[in-house]
Length: 101
Image (tube, rainbow, N blue to C red; front, side, top):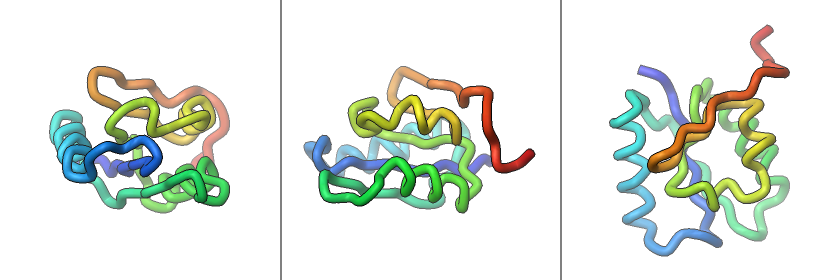
């Protein structure tokens, strides 16, 4: 079972309970286990770096979020680290730099 990182942007979420349920459903349907959930908001310092670093340290193969809006402007950058998974969409990891080479 692959590791996955959950992501919740408090500036986007409407229901913490619903967001958690979506993350668990995504993990189950994609054969992943969520090793950690990163919670960010408008005050988070360098959120893209935080998310990418946490994905790397947890050896996540995917970052799961309740919707694409939770990734904000970091969507393209985060695909260099992992696949991004939201309900109905999987954005594959982009070819490019990897810390594992």
